[in-house]
Image (cartoon, rainbow, N blue to C red; front, side, top):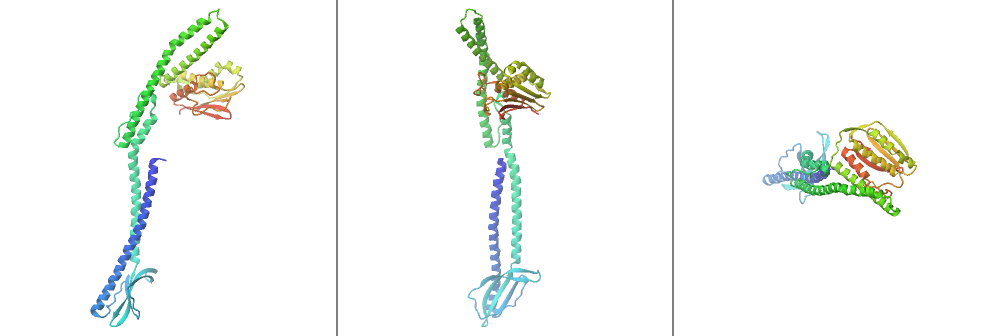
Length: 419
């Protein structure tokens, strides 16, 4: 869930909850105020009647209106104090029952007790209350709408630099030959984020540059001693008087030197790929390369009695010929190496992907580590552990996606070409 959506949900929920509680409280306060005002109006009529009786010793002339009227009745009972009462009456004109508020009080005029009832319709009060509530609800709806629109525009504008930073981080790669350079921002928190990321990537880039420089130098420096070792081994092997034990030791040294040479070549290739020294501007026939690599390994395939099935369509990509040969050479070597005798290797090539599947000797590889450098499964033998890492780097350079899966007791490597 996006932060904006989360904020909006919390903000709108809290706002609605606050307005609902406020509206309920406002309704009761308003009802109390209007009811109190209504009672004051009834008391005012009571005081006018009492004042008139005190001055004239007679009841005033009653003048009733549509919403207020007074009734006078002779009574032997005297109310100790005025009292308010809620009642209702049928309005002939409106054809409906209306609520009324009544004030009942007793008064003595010329020795005669009277019960006076001052009646006032609550229709006006209720209508006024309804109108105020409707206006309030409308105002609340407008406030919520404007609050949402303002927050949406304001927050999107405030968070735009953050999303710009995220986009730049996604596009950044440590092999870009420079640290990340995020611009300064007027918002302190986002500027602090950019500054921290700039410092972090600068430190990472320095470490990467130092490691890359060491790898390059080590790879180049290894060439001369390796060439000397292999030439001396060749001279020793040409000597006829060598004993069997000495010959075995020399052969063991030669084997180690060859593996070291392969490691050196692999590291050097990885360095060149990371430095983007290969231009992907050649038209490469993928089907032709795959079939050629299968033909080159016919002897090894027959020795292990493997069965290879292919389903390849014609496909030409803008790629690098040498890198394409390395890519499919490593994929095929990997499939042959980890397929048991009499096993099956299936290769499928379409316009959108290429897939290498082979029967497994043991269980699945570790998906999280399979493309890591120097990762070797338990049955890997004496490989350098860089074959799949090279495949991954070539795919990354070309913009391909490669995934490993284990289904039906088969290792599956699938490369999705970029559209």
